[in-house]
Image 1 (cartoon, rainbow, N blue to C red):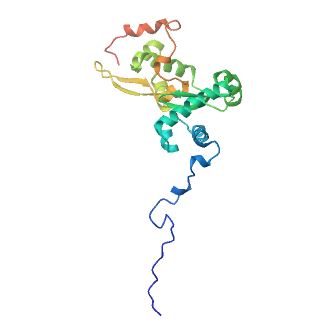
Image 2 (cartoon, rainbow, N blue to C red):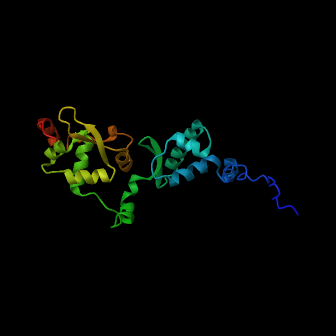
Image 3 (cartoon, one colour):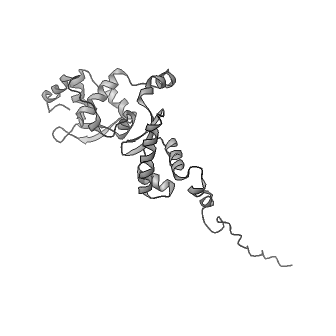
Length: 214
């Protein structure tokens, strides 16, 4: 008897042909309950950060135009049905959020000792950065009247504030808010921030802060 191994015969298995074995496991959207619309909802339910139309179209393997139509339909339906959640375009992408009017209920459920809140000092510092960005630590300290180095490090660690380059005159590091900041506040852009002048008129004192101090 020959000691040679018999040649392998192809059995149509995609893995044997060098293809992704999971590639054929994705069903056609038309075969799923609810089709592309339901598939889009499923994706939006699991995303942690806002996703744009191109990403959604790639996930569903449909055109961007189709995704745009589906998103508009979901927004309208959620509003008309008075759902407890809504679909919003935030920070360049789409994500499902709970409706603002249910905030008291969510606070009782989620915020009762289960999350780490920002301190009052951190909130004040973040507000100054948001309305005066890009701004240096020293200029923020001038408004608050205290050293903000530790608080700024906390905001950077939380991903709410980031390095935005250097002041061309003093060389001081400038800081600005991030996409995460917009995401957390549910804003589409910084233009959506409410006017701060009526609440913090002393913000103009920044203009009197010595430019040479960093």
